[in-house]
Image 1 (tube, rainbow, N blue to C red):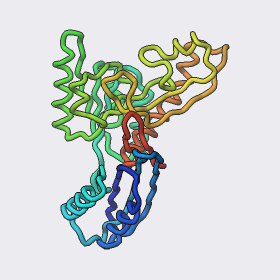
Image 2: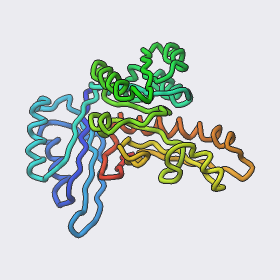
Image 3: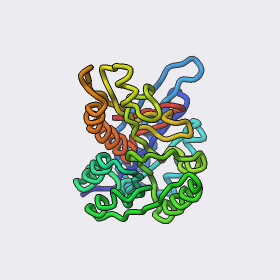
Length: 287
């Protein structure tokens, strides 16, 4: 029998007794710890503690309201930032695309194979080219054009759609538009982008062209949370591949596609599996 599990993410100033207190919370209420991972960073005044704790709540003596209340008391005592989620509530994902299909295909195939850990519920695009891809996988396709004069209106349509779909996460699978600060304020830490370079190198447009001009020996891909600062959000996942002087831009693009789809899918899975904690401008990703 598969019982419901809870995943608790915690961050706070490091101090003694944190692991004991969190473990005791689970033990006292009849839970069983399935997985625990913690990371502490030293510092005279600002050492930080991060933890991911997953536990079985099949025989838990508290309901979810009681769990929230008890965690609230622990949070006040230890000055914790915490998030609690449950395995019977799968996150709902909407993918934004433009014309490039490889990342979209990879995410949809992984969902079909049961590998993603959430539910892709719709595809949104500012072009119609990938409508047949969404249709092939039985997903609704929403065409919302974005013109220079009507970008605010288009974003409002997107926000209204996301609200109506009760979405939890937006994935930019080579969506070639910059989201406004207003959009990102409402979706803070819930938008993941794939950038086709090894950030912080080659931000902005045409990174493969920039890489060719600089004669780099490796190219990369980076999945990150989106912030108002272009390509500066906390990094979730990265990977690289070797290239040579013989590679033209078209070769870099071809080689980069494999990296992009793998890196984006790994980042989305980590987020959906509640393995990512944001700490300032960076992330803690539990493996």
